[in-house]
Image 1 (cartoon, one colour):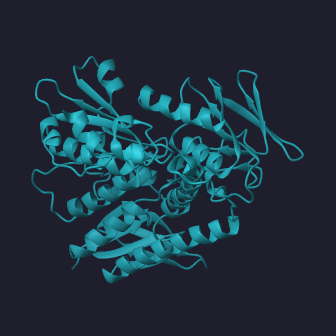
Image 2: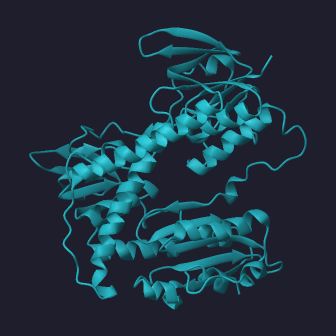
Image 3: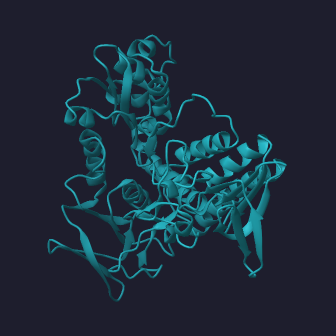
Length: 453
């Protein structure tokens, strides 16, 4: 009898687990309550990047004068933006659905929960239930925006991230609460589209988990855009008046605008899955997993946001593949486990920010000896051709061996360029390997080889 492989949650982790298991001969059932492709992916990540691309196009046009062109007029069409986003979502969902069905995966629209150790209960929208036997269960139900008690979310004036793709109207003055990755992307997006923006920064720099030098470049760009920064302030209340919102901070300051947007993290969707009675250990709602993404019940795995690891689609996808391979016996012997410290990540602001591996600040805080080399894009012919010399490439390496340990990039196409450093970190390449590459000229990638010299 074929291995019965049941997935609850059809985001990047669940989809990859399902298709990989199906290719390996398992009998696969996937349960999804919202959209195939994942709500966090298709309703958060993709729409935000689509709007960021629109904002980037606006910023590019505003730089037209530096390219020898007269600045064109810009007229935003929110209906067209909504249609564009919906079209992208529909195409991606259709693509994922087509791949799953082509692999023979059984798709069920509704909710799933653990009935017992080897049975998943499926419930459809009309209340019909079905008990599905399972040899392996993959939990990949994702997360949702965190909403504190003091935030009166109404979807009109006070928004979560999922209310803002795009919002009901372009905010005249948007107050963004939260200066992490999501928050700074929204600052870039709406300031580019023409909104005034105030950013509530709980620490003394935006992106508190990132390299201070990287954060400084972004702060400089925000200030140039007219963004107001409330540093060292934590929001603790929001008052909604006639056409105005006021965000009260713990230091007594009050930020006033037309709309407020909360970007203060997410919480895992682990409620109602029937996990704890089975002995599946949770930590603040996240499923505790080992290096194979197994929970404390060996045949029950967790991936994606629910696993409490890096909340990145790329990580979730890799987790899904590794889970299927492990559950179906491909990893019985020694194999390469997921190394979350080597995952590349990007922030789609303008300029873009990307990093991978060991950060310079972390190395110094650990007392670790490293070699840090940096090349500004102002020395790049391609950057000057595009009239955009902002940012730099930074490579962190071992001074004794030359092995590339990490790197950061700030600038145009940083999310693409970081792939070269990510490959070097994963494969254990040396700076000499990068320095000896014969790269295209003129190209931004030349800065990678220059930083490696």
